Length: 250
Image (cartoon, rainbow, N blue to C red; front, side, top):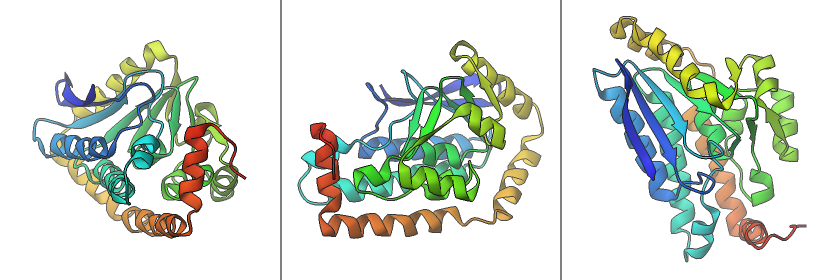
């Protein structure tokens, strides 16, 4: 349980998220994930990373219960910094990162997937940002890398989800497969990349990041500033309490 890393094949490192029941990592879990991804990329023997998860869904975002049972703002700040670190690690990893997504991919999960190089997903996978219903903001930066601008705004304001099939239509999900075929599909892609000269692939990753029109690190941290503002107003605590208590927030 937690974040684990292992060799999935020659040149392929697999990083797995495993925080039952819904893969909502605690603060330390996000930092552990960042460290595992960066360490994999720093290993000369790793040519590509597969980011995957155990359980029924890929990631449900941050652990809101941890946030609410912690006095002060320590857990909130930790979650925000941890997410920023993990999202950045995926983007900054020296080698390509393939995200293998099953079931739900929400909140922080979108941040991870949006910064990945390649996305494969199951036919029951869906993606969304429930942030506005939780009194928070963030990861519009990453959702905008998956869907066109106006669709991103609609999904963001309404907290609605988008399916893997819809993302495949937009070209952001490379392939949609059954759950049984997800790991094999990700590994097949990883093996194809891993067989190439890693010196070239590493420079290719650096070059593609260098021409990216979106400054993802700065953009996400800008979004997070408004989350802190909402916390000062009390709106965020009210929304998180309503979520935990199972009540509808006005």
